[in-house]
Image: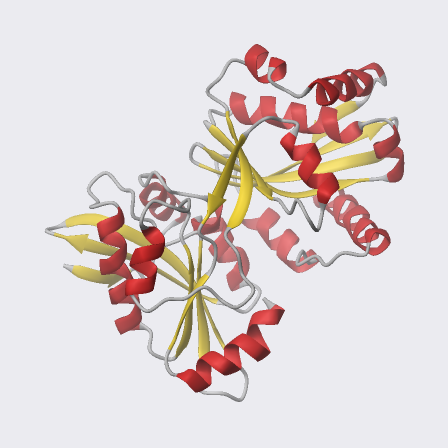
Length: 332
């Protein structure tokens, strides 16, 4: 009974454990953990048991802070508590206490895959966690893929449908990424887009390459390219785990914007995710103030607006909290 570390566990064993929880997501996948391991993080996977049944699970990433006796233990998308045997939100308090007792060397950051207003925030507060300064709940649009394709297309906003039709008239080819060369083309275009748009991106070539390397047919990342002749004019990379698909990274060139390539590309991605058996597509984070264009584009798909509780930190002592909030938090 209690928290149990799983030091050695295979891809299938861990992913099968994760997808048994209704709040499972790509950031708790074996693939995400292994890609981060190659980036210098230590991976910790564990379950919380009650009366011989798994009621919670989590994958955490541990990184020591150089020259300091502290570390950061990060659980993105977790802990998972909506399992077949779980006490649902009640299991969250138990596993948080187990994590606090098991990790005493610094800051714990959790980001449960739960919407606001369902009691999670109260449990986090009661467990000693607090939302970092300046952080807000995280918003996204989630598309129900259980609906028929005709209904999904009909529910698109009128302008979105018009732009989709315009793109389809251009004779674009949408194809899956098939090699690291395709991946490199995507990353180079993404880097160019970040430069001329002037925004910050946490995507690195090393991370993208590792995600590609550890992925397999049933889980991990899969990429898609929109081709105008021999030229790549748009690309998207999705993370897949169980019935969940997550829109991770996207790029559109200036030519792609002129011919509305991103509309046809996302529509084909929706069709592909549905064909793979996914029941939901998370369109990724949105920022209606800082990035209105992306917000309007995703809003036109007419998914459900979901507000997740976001990041919450636990720090041992005021000095550590001040140091983390002022020196580390702005870099995350």
